[in-house]
Image 1 (cartoon, rainbow, N blue to C red):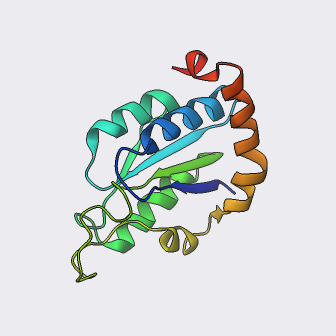
Image 2: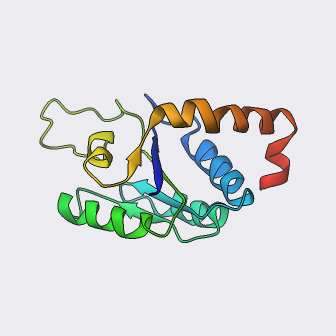
Length: 144
């Protein structure tokens, strides 16, 4: 079963893409098959995701695609991956709209509805300490 997690932040320009790229390349360098996803119609970040993960990135856009199709796409592409990384769209509160039916996005709840293991504790206890250690050893210059 693939591990999956979502990288999100409360505002834009907070480093989501940088973190996604660094983690994608690091997991890939460790011999894992990494599948990256980007929420929304952002095709520039997916180009960078594809390079870092060494596998084509996929957009998850609930505005352009029905929710059921987004789930199917996520499950289909995650099947062949050891780790799936989803980069959230903008910041959690960017462009906030009072009518929640207007602005939808691929959220953690959607990942929990899939058959893949979405476990933030696993990320915190296993992967982030390794990533922190790698960053201490000038990791960033080695991966990009």
